[in-house]
Image (cartoon, rainbow, N blue to C red; front, side):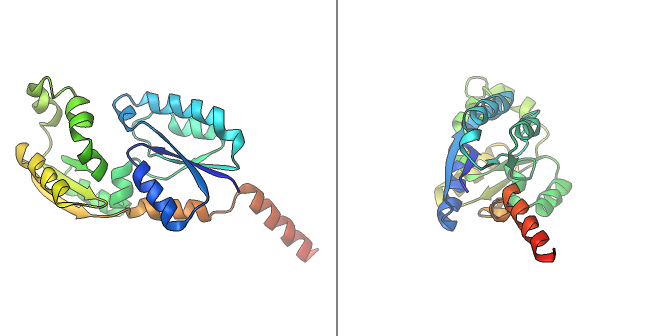
Length: 211
């Protein structure tokens, strides 16, 4: 079965690592992570990419959450493809139960991942215009009280950067080394699930067995 993964740029590195870990025979393409600043670009570009590539693959798995991209699931249904379950990568990495617990403990929680830490200046400061207008920070972050770093492969440099960001915002800091979290489990489950054609073959074999 010819399979394609289309990943968010913020998940592309970890998706590639999981492909290599399990030696999956799949192709991988990614859309720019900074599309999250204008989420409708996610659905628009995904629609275009699927229109161009869907016919070349038996199965396409989209490695995205809902991510504020209104209509993403409608686009996937249009092209008969599936995505990893979950609203966003923070929930995927933390795990559904732990993410729910964290939000119940402190709704004003700002999350960082390895990717977002590396891209912080461009994605957060530049993306929100804080590099030019730092006075806007209270408007964006006035209701936040805690920073949780959900790390995949943490380094001392990344950890120190996360702590410095929390200190600069006067936020409580928490580090959770989650690795791939439930992203791995969900991708493995999708890869192990039977394709529609496999299911039809299995049903046909059962009919022949009992006829």
